[in-house]
Length: 118
Image 1 (spheres, rainbow, N blue to C red):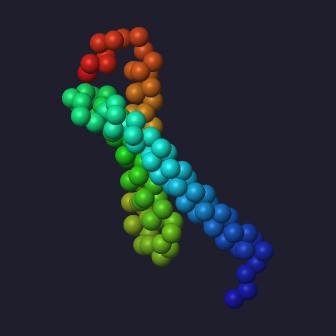
Image 2 (cartoon, one colour):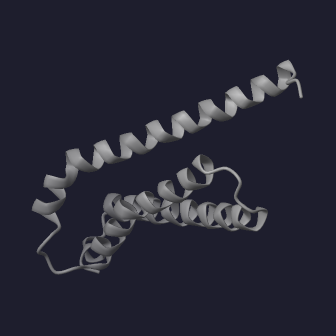
């Protein structure tokens, strides 16, 4: 079977997206390594507050999100039902992570000192 120019372009674009996703995962790991010492200094060993729990969720959930997304992209041949479950999980996980991150930003920028002690 001969590939058309459009087929070749589609394959190329899929591979480019995979490479960008791998590069993004490496940036995530690099950021984690750079900021781990600050996390240990300022958050570990403290009594956990609601904001600390939200911080840890937003800090570590992307590793799960990225791992699942990379798995679905790097291992072709998954069943359609598996791909659908992975897509739905990723979509909800990303959405919830963004919502929690934005709410943390709101709380940290708000001038309500009582919220910090939650």
